[in-house]
Image (cartoon, rainbow, N blue to C red):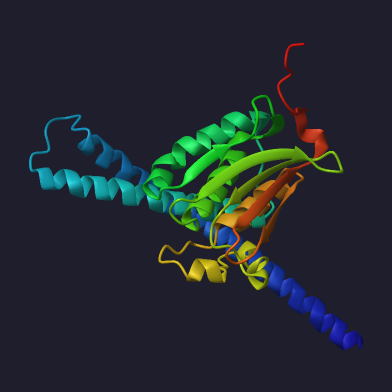
Amino acid sequence: ALTLSRAQDAMVERLTRANAAKSEFLANMSHELRTPLNAIIGFSDVMRQELIGPVGTSAYKGYLNDIHFSGNHLLSLINDILDLSKIEAGKFELSEGPVDFYELIEETGALIRLRANEGGIRIVNDVPPGVVVLGDHRALRQVAVNLATNAIKFTPRGGEVRARHFIDENGDLCFQLSDTGRGIHQDDLERVFESFGQGRHDRATRERGTGLGLPIVRGLMRAHGGDVTLASEPGKGTNVTIRLPARRILRSARQTAA
């Protein structure tokens, strides 16, 4: 029994070291890839705007737009990998300040509205002005963008994505994003939170994700002392709820004049 226990301890230690090495590799790789990517995006932007003279042939403009879009998309994936590796290594540090969630949802809506309009999807912000929390603005915006992008991806034309907030029985502040999409099978609800994991709803669409979005959302929410939960049924849409502890509430809604 003692020998078995030692073997198990040794295996756990090896797995822990391997996981730490993987996280360190991902962090280093992300830094290495970001440098040339920033140069590609920067130079293509200079050329797109013709800052130092006309490009000439119109076909070049199309190629430059493709380069710029692809570079930005790849950079966002690298940033996701970098954030995930920091979260897994326990090295993600919050830069805290007041965050107004109404403004955050409006900001997110502006970023995804073109894609929503193209898909004929309505975005509704039911979060009132003046819901303010103490948190990392960049991290919470990333949470909102990842969740909203997912919701739009799996919502059919004519559907709706709606944001609202409420205080739960523990006094914690909850934000919920609901969609009228295809939903997620019960067996896949936890799988979608695994790094690089994808549920059946993801595999069924032509627009497959990386499997990084929800693991990052969970990691960023837990870094705030909160969490994220999913409630869904196939064909009945999905509700994603992020929770922030009561101690982070600075203001729950704007006070109206008497």
